[in-house]
Image 1: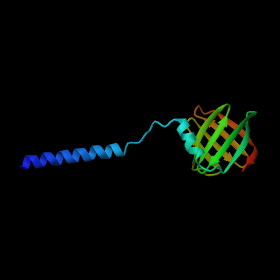
Image 2: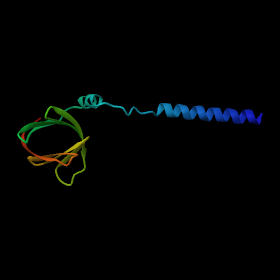
Image 3: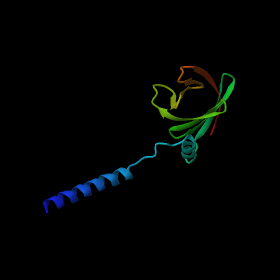
Image 4: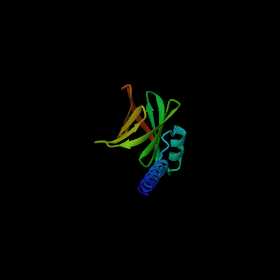
Amino acid sequence: MRIKKLLLQSVLIGTSLLCLTACSSINKELTSDDLAYEIEDIDQTNSADYLCENTPLNIFFHAEQAQLSWKDKTYLLTQAISASGAYYLGEGLSFWIQDTEAELEFNDMKVIHCSLVRIKS
């Protein structure tokens, strides 16, 4: 009788752990399209146009996220802590804004200076 009770407890605990694991699974394979869709669901607050190396750069701000478009590529950024100005980090790059100037920096440490053209609300 005691063996049956221990076996039953083991089966119940194992099943419970399996169920909890299945319920807590997270889909870590989000594509950039999925992330862009999530950003589109947030009300846009404003956008800005910059000129970086004589090439237009556009950035849309969505709460603590931003969508940066430059040279036919789109990057999704998240606001980070900055001592001054606004600092956004993304996969492979960062964008720092201070007054009317900005810097676009890629992971290869290439820094591109940008100047504000206009802000759109």
